[in-house]
Image 1 (cartoon, helix red, strand yellow):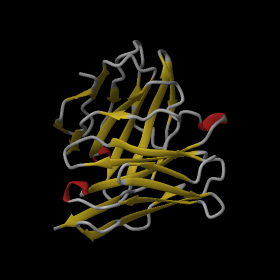
Image 2 (cartoon, each protein chain N blue to C red):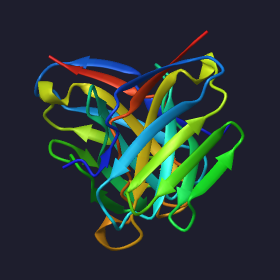
Image 3 (cartoon, rainbow over the protein chains, first blue to last red):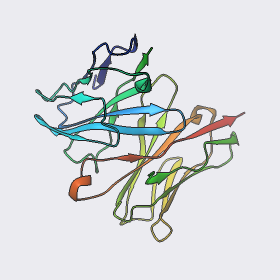
Image 4 (cartoon, each protein chain N blue to C red):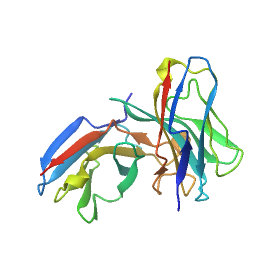
Length: 115
Length: 115
């Protein structure tokens, strides 16, 4: 089954404790992206990747890191999480580089709480 | 600054009637628009899209209208069904330059269809 898999689904952590949210897709998509969803703010793009070893900032990249060492994986790293990073996170991928003509496939989300 | 705006956070419609969800954008470079639907505890899923060379695109009960001069698009659902109850996100992208790879989302509209 074609899918985008995020782990974990729920995560509670404390301020400053490094964490990684994993994202993997099995559709051989070139484009991958991370979004966060906050009440009243909709979906905001954190980082995106057009291909392996190519990443770029979205709207809200501060406090996050990403890497794209292989095509299927695009982990989101919070090196020193803070409470304002409490949010619902979505990973997404699409079939072509631009994501303009092709629909995004989203994972089921990771609910992160930073205490 | 929000480049894609969904000014109605919620909409309530009776089953069988038409639902009209609105979206405005400010960036005249946007040339491709998409609608995503999101159920609770799931990731958004692609619903319908429209290119700026068109003013209408139809897919079953869903029709998207684009008014470029007004920088406005709308999603019509006819007839509305209770299963359509979800959050609907409008999204837009631009064709070139540093924004390639960026998808800008609105804040979403919660549609509730009641029997």
